[in-house]
Length: 340
Image 1 (cartoon, rainbow, N blue to C red):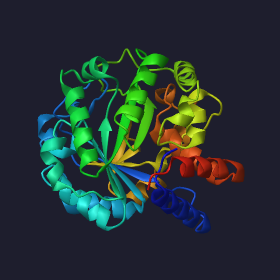
Image 2: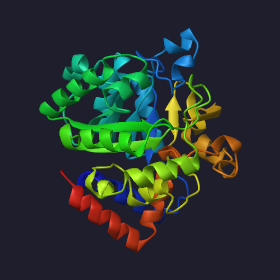
Image 3: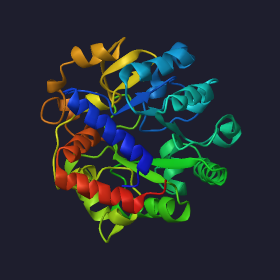
Image 4: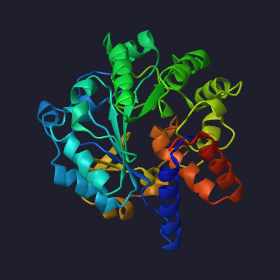
């Protein structure tokens, strides 16, 4: 795990505070969607399926920042849609960073080089570029040629300017251990991004492509093989060791989607950004009036093949904090991979 030491300390302190206050449900990171519009039509995403009137909407800065502050989460992942299409995205980021929130701006990078001047490097801020494979595979997944090359160029320029750059890679049943190894080797060794996040594709109900999502056993076998030969220890993966164990099938966890809540133009989404069982106006209402016990594998059939980080990474983090052995293990990996 390559989480910077500053961020690790902040999250550990936050978790300790929740324990002292005896809170059993709280957010680790808010997934903020200030718009649904995008400049790509990825096969595995259903966000742009909203009506044209919704796609034209942009969340006001005060509303976006207010939602994050209301939740109290120490980290924010700004997604969409493509957040760089939001005319005030730089102001949203600036205000959140000023509040010492760790901000990850998720982007396909098509607009990144044009918009980069609007942002300032900070240990509290990172561009999170979506890369699903090497050139041919990535361009196929986003249904447009040239996107991979532009993303690589943008990453290099952002690194040159002193920005932290992370990546997010989603893998499908068309992937093999070798395709995973190839793209993560490239990101880790050639581009030298700061951190990498990985996730098995979830069967998002509005996605145009419904044929290539992974099942649980496929996921476990795929990552078990990809992580072999010391790759898992060598790659700068932005995940807890227990979550990586989970992907390999070494441990299993219940879903804790309440720890990574989603806030969008419609409000707080139940139960997570992948499923939509309605929206509520406040974070408190989301937590207190959602029947969390009915979600997760073995409970809701829609969750049967889900191993997404939004549901299971927080469970792994909480399990780590509850075990001295696992806490020391995570600390060792953080220190060995830290580049503050």
